[in-house]
Figure (spheres, rainbow, N blue to C red):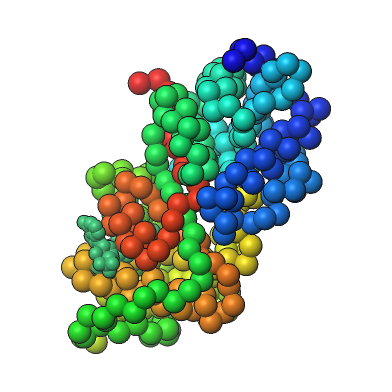
Amino acid sequence: MSPAEIRPLAAGDLTACGELLAQRHRRHRTAQPLLSARFETPEAAVAEVRAAFETPEASGAVAIRAGVPVGFVLGAPKTSPLWGPNIWVEAAGQATVDPEVMRDLYAAAATRWVDEGRTAHYVVVPAHDEDLVRAWFRLGFGQQHAHAVRPATRPAAAPRPEGLSVRRATPADIPDLARLDLELPVHQGLSPTFSAGRVGTVEEGLEDWAEEIDDPEYVTFVAVRDGKVVGSAIGCALERSSAHLGPARPDNAGFLGFAAVFPAARGAGAGRALGTAVLDWAVDSGFDCVVTDWRVTNLLSSRTWPRLGFTETFLRLHRTIGY
Ligand SMILES: CC(C)(COP(=O)(O)OP(=O)(O)OC[C@H]1O[C@@H](n2cnc3c(N)ncnc32)[C@H](O)[C@@H]1OP(=O)(O)O)[C@@H](O)C(=O)NCCC(=O)NCCS
């Protein structure tokens, strides 16, 4: 195939890039029909690419072959220090008819990103597209995170371990909820995740929960074993989440936003029971599907959520330049 001409992505490219994104999304939905049909239409896809282009300090590249755009990549930095000196290619930030071209696109776009001092690169890639994922792997990227979805259906009934029950949280549970909030960042700070996420304090958790326990937008469950709270999980509408944007946001979706079990109680069914409670709540609330996500290096969550029927929609890949 003839080499593509690669040049910086400009405002005049947005319509063609949106069409490429709509095509990508149509292919994606044949593998993952729970994704929103909305982004199959060029209008919605163009709006997503335009929003990505208008994000402060966005830049990218477009590939042209025989006068026709055949691919693009578009990234912008996030302000949180959590991600380092970063650039993010979000779910609407890339599409190509030829995965090999993505390597040329990245080469061009990353020249500018690294010149700007942005050496921590994150890209959100459709999980079903093995050739595209492999193209990114051959650019030095590895998988950091998974976005996933499942239908809002009740999971097959599993025998509830003896002595374990799940119920809605009450204000009396706040001290346990505040301690459980720390378990996720503590666990993910350890090997092999080594996340830089901040571990808060129990005092902060107590204050937050005093304000939030009655928030009708969220539902909190606790798992109780032998009279003691051993875990918690939170459900909400996906719109409450700041992640899962654009093509990565299925319609009418519930969100399994948080779960944690105290270390001594893990591996004995509490996580499954909590996840099941959120799924049952999503069914009762009329959602069509439920979304969650996990660090793929978190050995616990990355094994628990697929067991509950979640399948990957997008992979977040990561590369750090300079070592
Ligand atoms: C993730 C977490 C909530 C799961 O809770 P848990 O009580 O440990 O989970 P369970 O005992 O119910 O096990 C969940 C599933 O994972 C499976 N699993 C556990 N270890 C496994 C392993 N090594 N290999 C394969 N599957 C495994 C279990 O078999 C079970 O599936 P099943 O019910 O179909 O048999 C808990 O481990 C935790 O708090 N981890 C730290 C914080 C965290 O990661 N939270 C999630 C944020 S996304």
